[in-house]
Length: 81
Image (tube, rainbow, N blue to C red; front, side, top):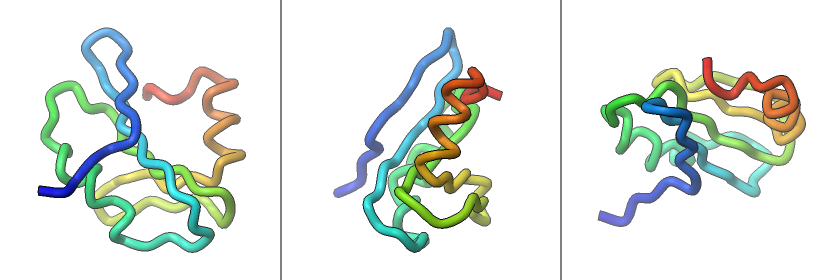
């Protein structure tokens, strides 16, 4: 299997999975790795970060965030719901 996730952030027993992409238009294949770990115990959120565009949510409840929105969530301590 050729699947990976770029980052897995941990806060206690909870995780946020992050995939980083350089494209400017969301594509469903960007979420392949995140979908592969959807049943990980303690996974609270899955996020794709990309440089531009608009904030979206995939059919699998994966947040698709422009980089600026992601940075704002970090600044507001809002990554872990």
